[in-house]
Length: 369
Ligand code: DAH
Image (cartoon, rainbow, N blue to C red; front, side):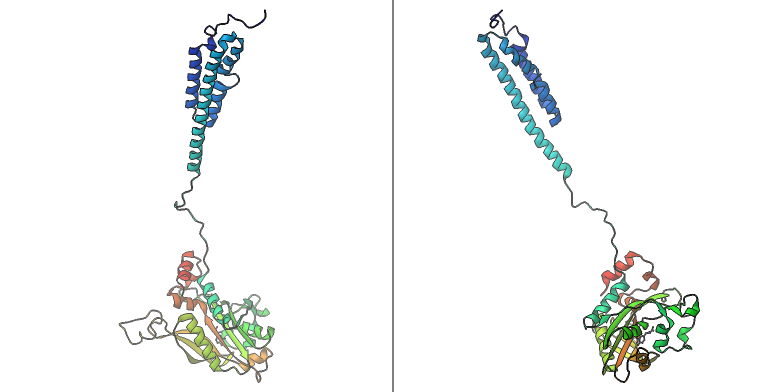
């Protein structure tokens, strides 16, 4: 047998008859429109338009038809495949647009949703105030000096002209380190930094020294065994009490606004003359004094707030640190920092200072003036 089979009738060849092709197309279109994802569509394309799909198989049959039948059938199959192709392309465009939309929706970030933030710390109000106080002096060209918290008896007492019989050496005040005979204690004031500064630095010196101090005190609302002071020391030629006065006034104004200071004569072994320095009440400016209608809780209606001690550096201290008191003079002062925080911020209980509650630090630091 040679040549095409002239008797081959496309109507009789099942895959090529119009009804059958129409059904193939209908099934293909149904599967394509039912595809809900691009993966489904890929499967539908393979089943209805792939190499082994009914339409592809039908297409192969065309060659077996007599030539006069091929055109019509070819057109039928071609149109059918065209329709299926177009449906696939349309559905593909729809699905990928849909999937993009879904992906974008899934990836959307709602920036207004409240999130659980990791709590961050806050500087302790005492640290913050010591920094501020230091800044007042740094702005005048002073330096910040540091000394150890574990101090020798000589720096803490002897060099500061606190003789062996001075009451401040009594065991109930000073925290000595065992064995007591070795003469090591937790410093009871920042004053020993004065001596260290004079021994370690070239003259003149202008330093402040903020830091922790320790005393065998009760732990209650007005006492802490560990508290903070800021020490000031100036040693230069021609320094007088007037320089001390001016420095403290400036310090007070920088810290508290428009206030005066006053000095009351006092005794400290390391200064001569010595004074206690009071701060004019920065809340009532004295108006609460003798005025029960306007009581002031900051100064307890006294008009003044005790701030610290000060004086002209005792020549014995200068001599102990190898400074010639005939050439140099100086002044010194020391203030409690914790109490200053209390005054400035109306804190009433010193125990809050050591309990480490972040809400306390935040409220004071945030509200610190
Ligand atoms: N060291 C004193 C105290 O702890 C405070 C003090 C007073 C420091 C007078 C000084 C000063 O430098 O001159 O109470």
